Image 1 (cartoon, rainbow, N blue to C red):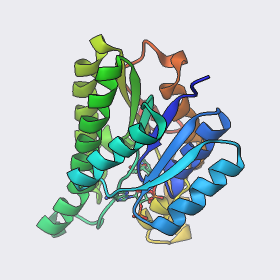
Image 2 (cartoon, protein in one colour):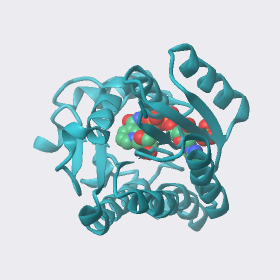
Image 3 (tube, protein in one colour):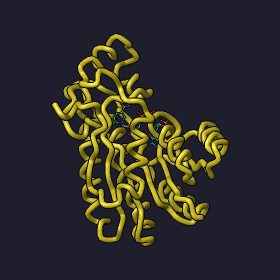
Image 4 (cartoon, rainbow, N blue to C red):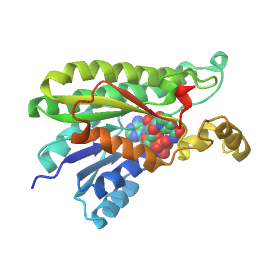
Length: 249
Ligand SMILES: NC(=O)c1ccc[n+]([C@@H]2O[C@H](COP(=O)([O-])OP(=O)(O)OC[C@H]3O[C@@H](n4cnc5c(N)ncnc54)[C@H](OP(=O)(O)O)[C@@H]3O)[C@@H](O)[C@H]2O)c1
């Protein structure tokens, strides 16, 4: 039987890593990608120990040559690409708009927006030719509302939402679905960086959330697995807020 093939960018930590483990438990074949060879090989070995076919393929999503080669290597290795999770992302330097720099803008947008665009471009070329595929982009509640002190990150995630809807329209007739997941705070290193490692600030922030806690990375991964599955076969162009009720307020 041909098990589905999934590619995850920025897969070595946090949500990406939890997603790789969740897909391994579903019996998928998995290409995990990231920028650090040693951690990447270790994750691939961990996935194989769970019984999954898995490869680490190095790629920095800011560079088109690396993204093109990543997708080519997935197809060479596994023969197809069924699910792609465009997860690589950065919050950059947080702070008020009055202190933003061109360098910070370039750094955030080159990973979050250009990286998502390049990933979509090369993944969709394969999936459109296959006549099937599902893509999940990592947005954020910051892609749906404003976040004081994280304006550039929020703008980049709003752009991810626009790319998601546009790509969904281009893929729908060919059976290629494109959705986004928009998490609220998730217990990963990114959340620690958001609060500057200040546990009191983190608790104060989480107390303002309807669910009074952060999501676990696995709670986000479960939604990604659903969106990548045949159970979501008529679901495209949507952004699912997995935020413990934050955007219901
Ligand atoms: N945690 C949250 O509260 C939260 C909430 C909403 C949305 N999100 C989104 O969820 C996604 C995953 O974040 P996370 O929470 O799991 O944080 P994380 O642990 O910091 O994961 C981000 C991953 O992206 C990788 N990455 C960054 N820039 C890259 C690039 N140019 N090319 C390839 N990989 C790159 C990082 O690898 P390196 O180690 O090489 O930098 C890291 O493994 C992000 O898109 C983030 O914006 C997170």
